[in-house]
Amino acid sequence: MSIQTVSTTPFDDQKPGTSGLRKKVPVFQQPHYLENFVQSIFNSVPELEGNTLVVGGDGRYYNDDAIQTILRMAAANGIARVLVGQHGYLSTPAASAVIRKHGAAGGIILSASHNPGGPKGDFGIKFNAANGGPAVESLTEAIFEASKRLEHYLSVSCEDIPLGEAGTYQIEAMQVEVIDPVEDYANLMAELFDFDAIRGMFKAGFRLRFDAMHAITGPYARRILEQELGAAAGTVINAEPKPDFGGGHPDPNLAHAREMVDEMYSDDAPDMGAASDGDGDRNMVLGRHFFVTPSDSLAVLAANATLVPGYAAGLSGVARSMPTSCAVDQVARSLGIDCYETPTGWKFFGNLMDADRITLCGEESFGTGSAHIREKDGLWAVLFWLNILAVKGDSIKDIVHHHWSVYGRNYYTRHDYEDIDSEAASTLMSMLGSILPNQVDREIAGYKVKAADQFSYTDPVDGSVSANQGIRLLFENGARIVYRLSGTGTQGATLRIYIEAYEADVTRQDQDTQQALADYIEIAREVADVAGYTGMDEPTVIT
Ligand code: VG1
Ligand code: CO
Image (tube, rainbow, N blue to C red; front, side, top):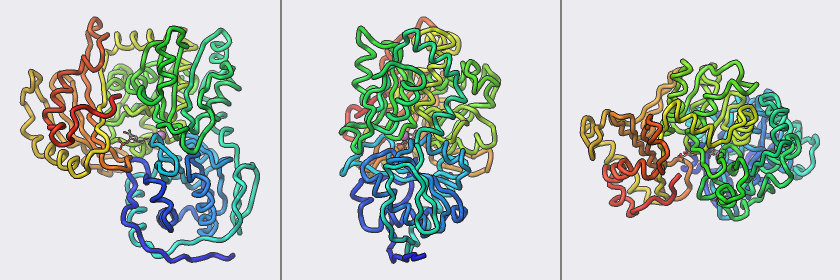
């Protein structure tokens, strides 16, 4: 075999963030940039040699080029077999499902998730392990360390693999199988959910609008919702994946999924609205004239899980990321199961699922998932809701209102200050860290602070510690303010402030969220002198 050893010099900025390495496309297009990172993966995961690797991405600009490069390098690094999605497509949850189903030693997923794409947009790459989940911190650290020492990478020369055509190909000794990206995933969904019940509901006239945002979920949603479940043709909008997501921002929230959201608040609104992000792992769910916060969505799914065949036996436990609202905690308490609080990012849920400590988990950032795979899963969450709706026959709004009446309502909002000066952002965080001890027992605007700390997580399965995962102000009445910096951006810094307050009184559960939280929003801004550090009076995005 004609392996080429290509000399290279290290880049010093290949440290993976919350979810892989994310940079602007031109950064990835620099000579050797992608290759260095890929070789660092191969050097850090020796078990890939002689084994199966899964490769696919969300179809964004540079996806195809990157896949051809990875295939050549995989052949040179002794990978036995690569499964790659047709057209280079694999949603993040589908990649996780394929890794698990085919017993692969890992997968490389090309995506910058909800970040915009295109020649000047963002690109990203991450490694998922044999359990189908994102590499744990010790592995991402090892990859980063390897990248700093790299002197050469391995490749072979060969023609491009025709990714558009399913089939089996060969690069030197390595077999490349171009597979249907939807098949395995669709089969898994059919095992978990009562497709007949959902079919019956569509047949009886239930109307869904699903916005795929010109991203990867289009082909999955069309196949499963329209073809298999009989939702009306045209249920899925913006269903063609485009390299630049049609110029949009593939982030399913009230600000970016405008077209679907407007329809859900119109006079002739469908029964349910949903959207997913660039790589298909996030979901947003709306009822008619009604928005379900992701934190509430997780709690409702947990409370109703036994209505769904795949979860009929009950939940072993649940987990949420620290900034996610405590709504699911209330459900766990009433079910008598454990509820774990992890740092932000899906990589922290994997160990808990592998050890069967949790079945469901989620994040406030429109991510919900279960132990069926090791990633959050947008379309899965939509199917979960559809299954619950098919069994209960109530509207989404009624289901959530009923939920609040039983468990109380956790008013919740996140305020993002995007593209702020990186130095100002880190000064703000260290200032906050230094004043934490003075906050305890203090009364701010009539609310007593019970605790104030830097969140640190000790993984109960492997004992690893992840420190500095966000600053928390916890009030005596259960309200919380959390500050952290984003780890997925590619430009400047993004400050995220998460604000939550609990309301058990049913007569006070119908307020506007921003109004209900107004006092705490004010406190959050003042304690951190947000305007002073960021120069911004208002956040750029409120979710
Ligand atoms: C954000 C979200 C986090 C999520 C991560 C990856 O990270 O807050 O909850 O896990 O994106 O999601 P950060 O560090 O910017 O806050 V995705 O859909 O990019 O895979
Ligand atoms: Co995503």
